[in-house]
Length: 178
Length: 255
Ligand SMILES: [Fe+3]
Image (cartoon, rainbow over all chains, first blue to last red; front, top):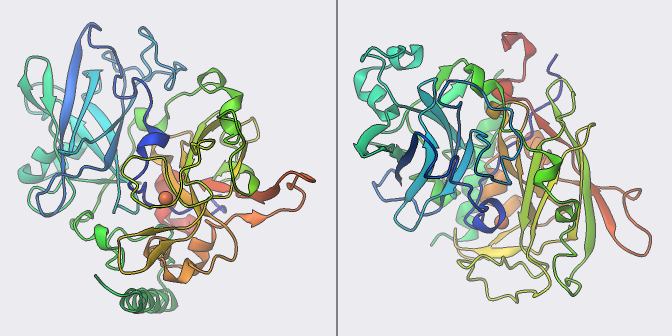
């Protein structure tokens, strides 16, 4: 098995916006959807400067923990939950999605940027696993200082903050799937 | 700003070192290095901690579902997006997307974006003083067929200068975005054209330090894909192996 060799990655570059953004791509659900939340944050580089040309994608289950097989990840409609979102950072390095809290407790995040030759995977968890929610083996395996980088923290009414630090102090835990 | 000579020397040093590691028994590196000093903007944008190994959760073993009705068939032809004909060399780029076992990646989205024939993007932050083409945007989409195949009609993009170092030029390339059947197979990459004299000088292309690996990004001229009196044809096949992508030896795979 596995005799075909992976095609290598290359950076998304600085000029991806016109190729990859599309109407509603950051709205996994519309804002008036039952249980809609904002998931937002800032992407920082190793010099603690915001990254104005990053692209984040999220992929998640619905609120009940079910994987959507609904078509229409690209052509948005108001009713179908597809579980996929894509948002570029603005000049301040900020991104924002409208989505729902996933039943599994986490959202998978892919981070692309100019200067980043191969995207990075991480997860944003809505629960640290110690508050009676389902405990997660990944979170449990990390020292507390690193675990905290994977937590989406409530920062307002129906709003959660998840910053991404590509390098250095508070560097986000990035994942390699086995 | 560094000269090309300085950048090229750095590229050579790293490649020599990587080749020695392979000689010493290490697997060739399949993907580019995230920490690749000749590509200056990688300096502050790569993690310094080791990636944490995890088993994919159920949701990560699926991918977003795109449908043929998400994408108009017209979106795979970048030459007809405007009223007039774009300038440049018309080409067809076609190939198959398969997984590590050679199984087709069916019904998945491919997105493509590129500069025009003069090497200029429509992007508002592109400062290259080459002309825009009112008849070319440079964005395409397609959904792969039952056999994993795709086909785009476009024009050959031009090389363009950038600010990595003095006299830095990117080889002509088309940006590709791909989804596999699992989200862990997600890939964004670039397709290049055979024989480009800029390959050896380009730190983005050379960030893939293994020569065989980076050659996988070069499309093949395919005369059978050329359309008489109309366009030249290139074939480029894409492999999405996903989680096991960092290892070449099957014995490291765990199921
Ligand atoms: Fe480019």
